[in-house]
View 1 (cartoon, rainbow, N blue to C red):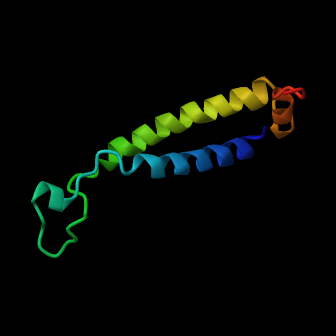
View 2 (view 1 turned 180 degrees about the vertical axis):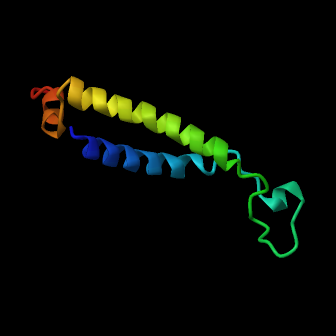
Length: 89
């Protein structure tokens, strides 16, 4: 796997992970009873984006590490998936 391919795969994993981490722990202004004039009631009060970016990076590193280990170290690919299941089920 080239460095460019590895970076592209990590980037895709990072973005998918970001969209799964973003809603964690978010409370809206309406839930906190602290609506600021001129803003939407559903806007988050404290999104904690720095923490979520670090969490996303850590999770994406773990997922990419598992992907790298399965594909590069073990040498498995998409064509090997049908070979995992026995033919005589």
